Figure 1 (cartoon, rainbow, N blue to C red):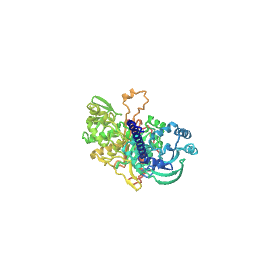
Figure 2: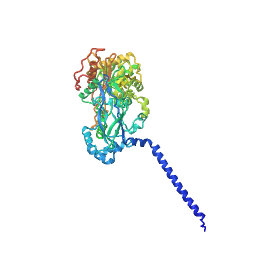
Figure 3: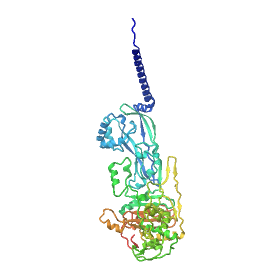
Figure 4: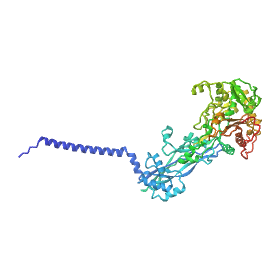
Length: 629
């Protein structure tokens, strides 16, 4: 008997077989894809994981380069520090480990988590520093509880050290962990989260020189992550050493004199022949050591919220009215434009009327010539020059001398001052310049604002026969193959000044210090110091009345610019006394620096002076100063 199978049933069976075959093929394709993904696509990752089951690569941080002063005194170096780090791949319960570590090292768990979050994209096998520069008690506590803290390790690392603490802090700057914003920049392409870089000052501007090349150590570990043996090591390469133009003794002399004076401010001391910075002061300052291993939030907040702004480099970023210091630029402009001769005389009767308004002088000076007007700082004389000169002529010669210009010093974040002009006012205010405004400008008030470093450049230019140098701090560097002198990228410019202009201005500046002028507290016997004092208002007289009762310090600022000796000068600079009230009170600071300078010159040009035994007094008692400065 034959059984007839329906055609439809045979077709159904074939479909089931085909479906089964397709499923088998799909499974094999998936398996093959997975094998390829894990064995080829993820080969490197799983190879590292396999190796890390018994091997670990530990990074060895390179020390940054040592920084020396011009006489080879160490200014910035490194010290050994111990970091407490976490290897996350060896932690089974991260929350429990962090909670226990927080108890052991007395650091809040939330702070430990914040550190981890900042480096969450780093490989799990790479140690993350949770407690930088740990104390010995923290290290001991962690070591004693190593079984309770799997994955927590203690690592040795170099940390930046500033043995001079606050001294020259704004020149050196500070270091810190590279930020996310910096990592996105081309200059930081070869860096990773957790690296230490310069964040201010020379540490920032010469970061590439100072940074070394990290090394590594390959070790064998057991199942608990304990090191058994070292199987290879690449030693780190230290960064280049830097030799600065700064003289430690001059820097110390300036800062000590400021502290005795009892006011803050700034000072810039230059070699007028080549622009080398011998001293750069900004006070109040901060201790860069606080940043070396990561500043905590409370300390950072205190620095940022401090009304005295200790983080601001006043020498480069402070903009102030120059007061009577600006009379030097006015004298140059008037002589070079030919509106006066050196023997031009003005009768000062306590002030003068210009454009229908009476402008006061400090006192009644009688009839004075240019050099006498500089000596006594006679406002009336320079009001008269302001009436004779166009504001654009003043702008031309002031900027030629370095005012209202970027000096080009090798430090970051320098700001530009302002010497007004017709074009400036039209652009900024949309109004024309009125001649009456020039009267205030003529004595360094009104819209004029300068930085201390620009005044140092101006004084060096006048003292040095019109040769305008670019200030610089880096003298040479050594990357292990010997010291290499750093050549300036910018050549000194020359301001063409007539010999009669230079003679007249220098004569007046010499009288300021060496006769009965306002700067005679800067006098040094046998050193022919030239200089000029200045007092600048923080607020106008009318504004002072309106601000009565304010907690803001409204006392005037004081200035003193100087150079020595008068011919062929070896030193020039500026001292700015914030709220010092009188310019002549800053002159003793300059004198102490200049005395220290000549005491160290080994008699090459002039007989040696003894090293000053003490910082000079800056008592405000001074009679017969010929004015209020």
